[in-house]
Length: 162
Image 1 (cartoon, rainbow, N blue to C red):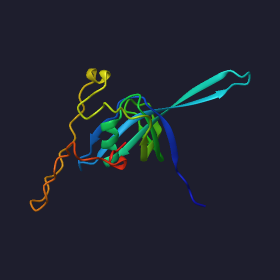
Image 2: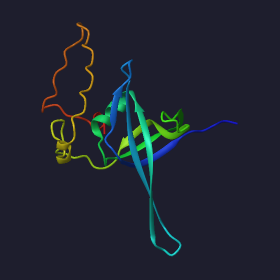
Image 3: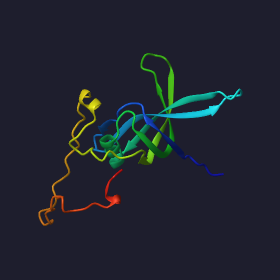
Image 4: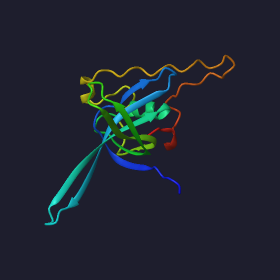
């Protein structure tokens, strides 16, 4: 008998992503996801429930989610369930939590054509700044210099990360 652990979820972030780096410089981001379910009740009334799921992404995916997502943003994730257990520090016994480890994702919704790297939504002015991404190592001295992207260069749809 074989096992299968796959989760597909589409919902909205319940809080801004929280990015941190492990001692080996691996990025890890955690965020909450709200997934709504709507249905008709026995008398035909509209019913709705929300399920809240803690999610974790690693490495480049963590950095991308942290850069482009904020509270309220819709996202589709594919991942696996992870079960964690620990001892409560206040003597409350064993605790446990089921969460999702993100293996792939897609941003949902229309892109804002006016939003660029320098612009921010009005509500972002109230938020504390996120830590700057870690610097990439300098290219080897024999590497060809890269030309900055100018207005004369064009992007293909696949070049944009969302």
